Image (cartoon, rainbow, N blue to C red; front, side, top):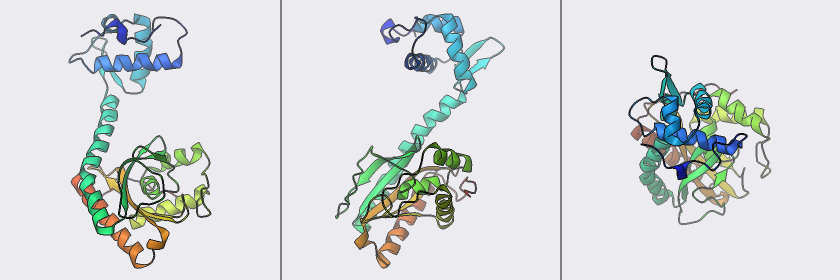
Length: 276
């Protein structure tokens, strides 16, 4: 099924196009391949989407190198690669975690009376994908869709603690660890020690690290392959997080995370490497 000319980026056949248009072309190719039930050649693909054979061939080589398209040497034709499938499954995993976690977030709020969050990792940042307000709202502005740093949030540290070491190193090397309060960890080596502790104990704490007067306990959610796909947390004003209340929050968060992970197919064997 050919795409209409209007779906092709303006000036797509012109030389010296911008990187934005190059990305747009690649996405058009991926979208078209996603509609096909059989392999397709370069010329046929170019005719279907309105791009020159040379442009299509060049983009396909890049996509092939990244695993997003597959080339059949027997007939020199292309189809979607496994990388495209993996990326698509990433969205499905997040959505599954959201669906499964929702009732558990509600139970946390009912049991503790505090605000519960669900977040995922995106481009080295935490993104909140669900939030249920407790009876006492926390001051932290963190609506659904809000982005927060990883190194000073309960959800962020819970996720970081269970990433592969190479991924942690890449994230920590990307930019300095910003200080938000006097408790914020800004030394990468100290943070690595903290992540190792979190990995051993099974939960993370934000002890006034992103906002003064705010305490948060978070725990990672694992899927069937043992990889962290999201994390949950409960936030409470620091005055309400002392002694028994703190232990109670942690207990409920960890239990909820274990129950959610079990429903996602987790069997108790996280795939992670040593942080330090």
